[in-house]
Image 1 (cartoon, rainbow, N blue to C red):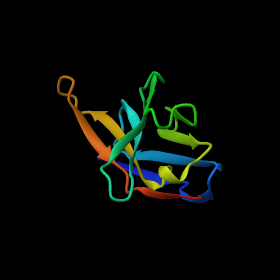
Image 2: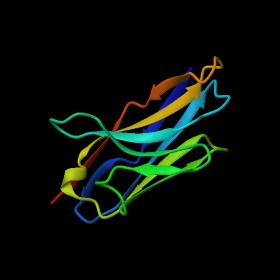
Image 3: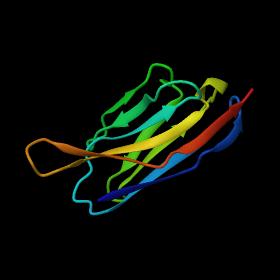
Image 4: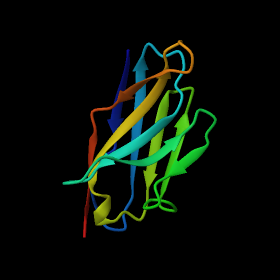
Length: 121
């Protein structure tokens, strides 16, 4: 079992910055892809950014050039640096981690509890 604990959310004015962190703990032999998703009010959950174990990254078009995802494999932690924040970035942000099951290429999918990010105009 793996637990994901997020931190770093809060209230910020438009144009400001926040840094989210997500630390994984528990029975971790290996973490594959890690990522951040968000749930804006009244909308569906969407991918924000994902990073592979080898540090390849992928971003939603809406955050490219403003957000940066990184990870520290030694600390089992993933980060999301968010700059030039906009009111439309307001959402609950969830950390995600994929962990091998040990059977073929199958993975367990773990989620954090979410952290609120609110951007005021």
